[in-house]
Amino acid sequence: MSPVSPVRETDASARTTREARVISGLVLRTRKGGLSVRVQGRTLAVTTVMVALLVVVMVVTLTSGDYELSVGEVLQAVVGNGSGGADFIVNTLRMPRMLTAMCVGAALAVSGAILQSLTGNALGSPDIIGFTNGSAVGALVVIIVLHGSMTQIAVGALIGGLAIAVAMYLLMLGRGLQGFRLVVVGIGVSALLLAVNSYLITRATWQEALEAQAWLIGSLSNRGWPHANAILVALAVLLPLALALSRRLSMVEMGDTTAMALGVGVARTRTALLVISVALAAFATAVTGPIWFVALAAPQLARKLTGASGPALLPAALMGALLLTASDLLAQRLFAPALLPVGTATGVIGGLYLIWLLVTESRKSRV
Image (cartoon, rainbow, N blue to C red; front, top):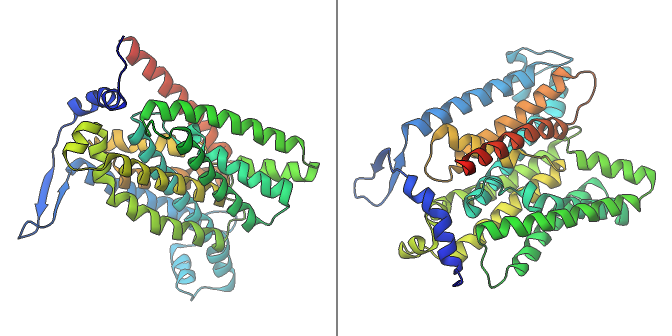
C-alpha cells in the first residue's frame, strides 16, 4: 500500500466540504472595485436576530434580580446620574459580570470556530483538544505551588494554555497542523493534563484543594471590572485579527492544493490562526476558569442557522456571547438563592449536546 501524503489526506478530508459549498449572496463593490464584500441575506437575518436576543438578555440581566430596577434607572446609572443603590447594583455588580460573560462567550466561540475549521472536525474545540486543561494546569500550579493571588492565577492560566499550544506544535513539527492528527494528539494531551490536575489537587491542603476545585468549575461570580477589562482588551486585539484571516481560513477549508493555488501560505495561515485560537481560549479561561462546551456548540449552531459556506466567525461570536450570557442569567434566576456556577450549567447542557452530536455523526457514518 502506498503512503498517503499529508496534502492528499487533507484534500480528501476537505473534498466533501468543497463539493457541497455553494457561493451565494449579494456582492457589494466600491466604485473602482478596489474593495468588495459579499452579503448573504440569511446570515444577515440570523445575525440581526441574535443581536436582538442578546439585547433582550442584557436588559433582563440588568433590570431583574433581588433588587429590580426599571430600564430608566439602569440607563441613569450607566451615564452616572443614578441613585447610590442603583449605581452600585448596575455598575459594580451586574454590568461587569454581564460584560465578562459576553466577551468570554464570544472568545470561546471564535476559538472553537477556528479550530473546527482548521481540523475539519466537529470535535475540534479547545475543551476537547486540551488547551483548556493546559490553562487549568497553569492556574493550579499558581494556586497550590506558588500560592498566588487571583491576578497571578489568571496569568498562570494564560501561560499554561500557550505552553500547551507550543508543546503540541513541537509534537507535530514536520508533519503539519493537519486536522484529524491534531484532534487525536490533542485528546491524548488533554487526558495527560487531566491526570496532572488530579495529582496537583491530591498534593494540596484542604483549603487549597477547595480553592482549586472552585476555580475548575468555571464561574462568573465575583467578576468585576478588572476581569471585564482584561477580556475586553484581549477580544479587541484578537477578534479583528481572526476576522482579517477568515477569508484565508475559508480557502484552507477547501484543501491545501486549492488554497496554495489561490496564493494562500497554508502553513503560515494555519499557525497564525492556531495562535489566535489558543490565545482567545487561554484569556477566557484565565478570567472565569474552564467553561465547557461553549466553544464546541456555539460555532456549529451559528453555522447551521446561517447556512454559511465559510467559518462564520462573527455569527459564532454572537452565538457564544448569547449562550453564555443567557446561561448565566438562567443559573442566577432559576436556582436562586443557591449559587449555581455557570460552568455547571454549560456542562450539563453541553454534555447533552455532545451526546446528540455523537449519535448524529454515528447515524451519518452508518448511512
